[in-house]
Length: 256
Image 1 (cartoon, helix red, strand yellow):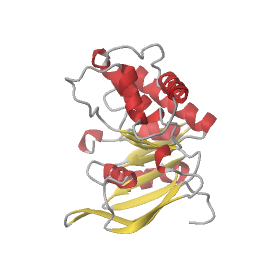
Image 2 (cartoon, one colour):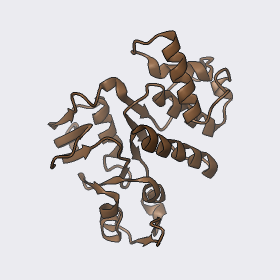
Image 3 (cartoon, one colour):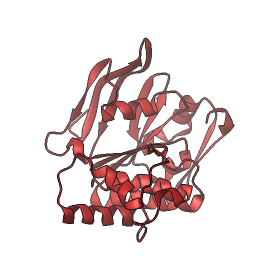
Image 4 (cartoon, helix red, strand yellow):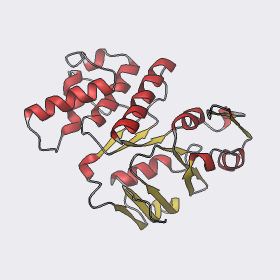
C-alpha cells in the first residue's frame, strides 16, 4: 500500500451475509482530499462495503484501520438512498438536518453555524423553517446531503444520492461536493451506476465484480478493458484534448 497517508484503509476485508460471501480480501486505501467512486452492477457489494465502513456490518475477516489523528468516527457522514424518517412526523428542514448532530457535544452557536453551513452547501439556504414533507423529491435529497454535512465530516459516504434526480438538481449536488472536496478537503466515497459522473468527478475508482474490488486512480480504472470486465459489456471511453473523459456503455439497461 506504499507510503500514502490514509484516512482509512481495509486490509484483506471479507464480508458475508450468513454463508453467502459478498466481498473477499478487499484492500482499499482512501487518503485525504480524494474523490472516490464505487462502480459495478447491482448486487456486487458496493452498499455492503459502505455498511461495513459505517460499522453496521461486521467483517467475516480482515480489518478496517482508521488514522488515529486524521480521522474520528464523528467526522464520518452518510447519505442514504432514501429518507428513513417517519412521514407522519411533522418536521421542518431545520429539525431534519439537525438530526445529523445527534450524539455530538456542541453549543447553540456552533449548532447554528453548522446548520447554516450545511444548508448553504446543499442549496437550501432560507428553507430552514419549511416543512420537510412539502419539499420536492430533489429538495428532500438535498436535505439528506445537508443532514450529513452538518457534522462537518472529513469523509462522506454516499449511496446513490443522485438516483432519480433531474439533471439540474444532480448538477447542483455534484458541484457542491466537488467544491467541498477542492476547498475544504472533504473526501467523498460515492456509490453510483452513472459512469459519466465518475468520469467527470472521480480522482479514484473502485470497481466491484464477482466479490472482488479493484481500486485505483480513475485514469487507470476508467478504461474500456477494466469497465468491460466489471460490467460485462463493451464500454467506450473518449478522452478529449481538454482532459474531459466521456464514458458510454452499451445495453446499460441490462446491468443497472
